[in-house]
Length: 144
Image 1 (cartoon, one colour):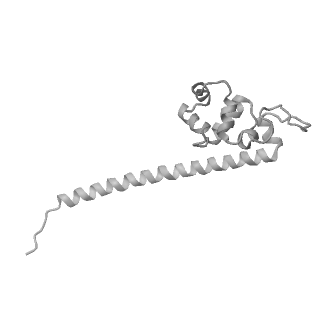
Image 2 (image 1 turned 45 degrees about the vertical axis):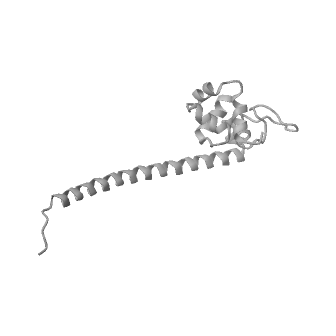
Image 3 (image 1 turned 120 degrees about the vertical axis):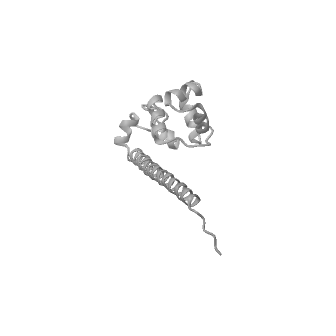
């Protein structure tokens, strides 16, 4: 399976989109966008998919390795563990997880900046409104 969307659909298995979306606590529309590769899920959603279905994080993200935890690939001598075990033992998985966490932290920082800018914008609008009212109430002088 070449796309993340195809792998998400495979991980969903026999669940309907509606039922799986409810398990993930996302909308059915969001799940549809992910499965059609029209949008990317956030790290929380990716980890929930792994947790709920037992698929390996590396397989879900890249298509490499076995789909399910505990499966062995041809020539593999030791089965992969759960996503949590894999994070502790697999440098690639740990690196991917760290990147996901950093991206989430950056997203939180941007959201906080956005909230601050919205508050500043509301304050400026209020000040502008007061200024406009003051100018309108000011007696006009005529120039002779």
